[in-house]
Length: 104
Image (cartoon, rainbow, N blue to C red):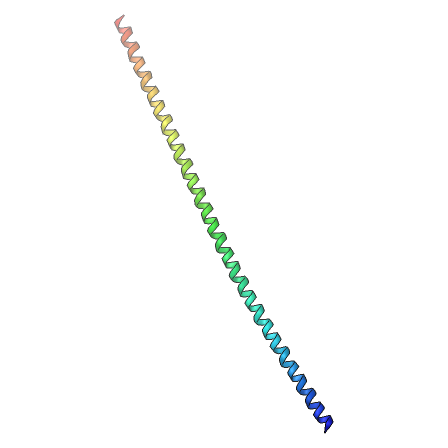
């Protein structure tokens, strides 16, 4: 009878330990899953932040490019205007010289 009782107690203890071990394994699985989800969310947030930063940098680069283009266009227009004025001045000088020559 004593031996039977000890066997039952030992078996009950083994069952309790198995349940505890299983509960611990489940807890660890949950923790691992929670950590994986946290890491996924963190990675998503990092990717979103990186995407937004790239978008901002691209927009800034585009704005600088537009500025350079506008400055180049303005410079080209100034040069064209100066060339036109020089051409008109040269024509005017030529007409003055022609008139001077006609007077002689």
